[in-house]
Image: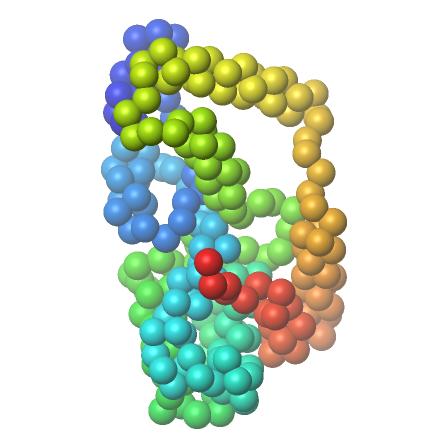
Length: 233
């Protein structure tokens, strides 16, 4: 599809389509595809989907799941990891090592910490920190926008094979709505963030500022992690 869009761009506007930044979830095939088509693209992975990946790993191991659900010491330790994405890309290894050093039961805890290390932290891992870690800011790291678009778009059709006339009509309406939103954004008018999301964001930013002063990484993680736990969908 992207190659087709590149060709279409060159044909219609005589410019090569260049994507500089993409928000994606954690499907490695999608990452590889985009890097193949756009070698210099910056991938920013969705924090919500990261939390879901970690939560699913915990739920896949009975001992981890029980500790997490009952909120015993090991469960509280597991929850600290959900604060890791709110650290700078270059400063993930040290917090990770400190977390491992305070594990209350390393025989069980290693089921999760080894997974995090091999998949998200060490050199040449599947999803390196530069795609999922960043100090807290108002920069959105989410795929919610595109997923919301797909839900709204798909809801317009009530059969697996709608008529071509209906598809064209929906595409035209979608294009009009998109143009309206682009014009609003170009004039500096954006949708307000939900109050609960705004409060959570500012809480995290303030906790990070405190961390920069006192350098207590475990306290920082414990003060923010409960606001970013994975959930059952």
